[in-house]
Length: 42
Image: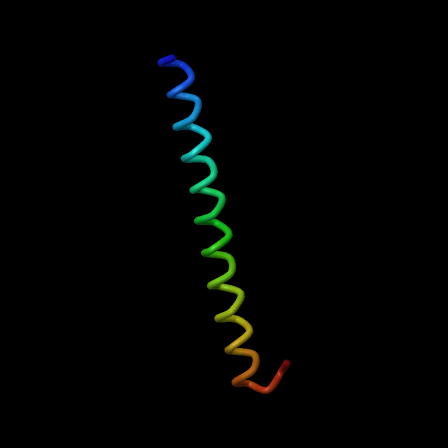
């Protein structure tokens, strides 16, 4: 039971880490798109 709990916690942290990375990438991409729109490149 303890091992199962630890595995669940590890998968939870992995999921949150992946979501965090996706969120950061999305923010950076939107910033780049805004900058290119301001310059008139898009």
